[in-house]
Length: 99
Image (tube, rainbow, N blue to C red):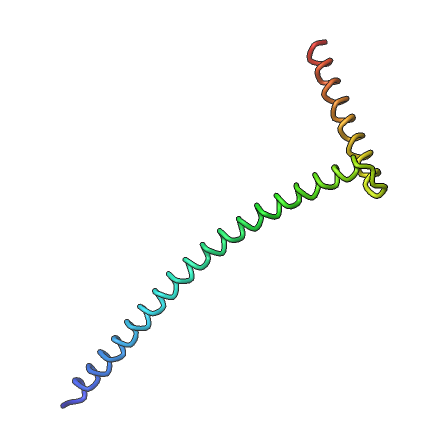
């Protein structure tokens, strides 16, 4: 076997190794993409759950304030004052549009 045939065989072997490595990397990339999508979905669900829990927490605070617990009275007063201010703004806007 001459030198060029030997070089050709080595080149062919290295090409085969590169092709196998490429296939492995491609499979890993596909797997990682699937994992990323699963993690994105999990994050989305976690954010939704967090928002729901915060909303539930706020409702419980209001309910406790309505029951008369001292620590929540201040929060209830602040909430009522905020709602009154929002009503005042709405009424002012209605008057301005009629006027």
